[in-house]
Image 1 (cartoon, rainbow, N blue to C red):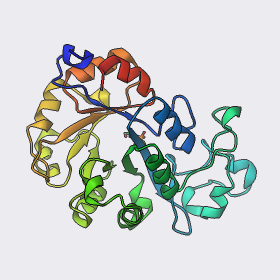
Image 2: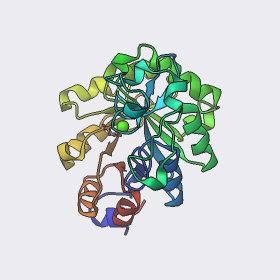
Image 3: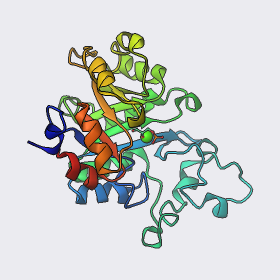
Length: 268
Ligand code: G3P
Ligand code: CA
């Protein structure tokens, strides 16, 4: 029995590197993708937003302050919103120095660059459309980038790509634009809303803190838009005990900043 099976789950959950292996390398950078690959992790989560001139970039916050040196490079451009900077400006920023000197010079990757790096490592992508209300049309644009890179080909749709968002509207839009893409709705919708969600979401991805075995079972009792049981990925779990607990609830995946710790705890 795997640790997850011993804890009550039927199979080991997938382990997904949150923003890359972001406990060990700066989040949402190519270095964090590489670190996940070095740890043997196949699934990587990221966050996608849009620059002023329409480039999709991989960054979590809606502003550049926490994870880049934008304040130093562009003083006077407060509040340093991603959407107020061009791709060329963002490409000048250091997105690794804040994490540690060894990572100085890491950049904010474009979605295209991020996908290329995943391909190099044969990794899979859990793409989060972040703050879609700030970026009208971002769903269509993200799908276009993925399509250009071949990620909407049948082989990828079969299991190498999931697009998620906290916004049900955004997830529904992705499903309607490209019904073959697997989708995930972040959050913990009430059980009475799950039937509606299952029309457009293949997965419900809740915070682990809101989970119970009963809720996981309730979600998985619904069939999603592709006729398979709706899956559950829990986030963000970084310690072995919690990982074993949520694996015991029967979750299908665990999103973690420490994928090595979680994999050791639950298998997968
Ligand atoms: O993938 C789940 C998780 O990333 C959602 O929260 O804030 O880290 O994007 P956040
Ligand atoms: Ca995210």
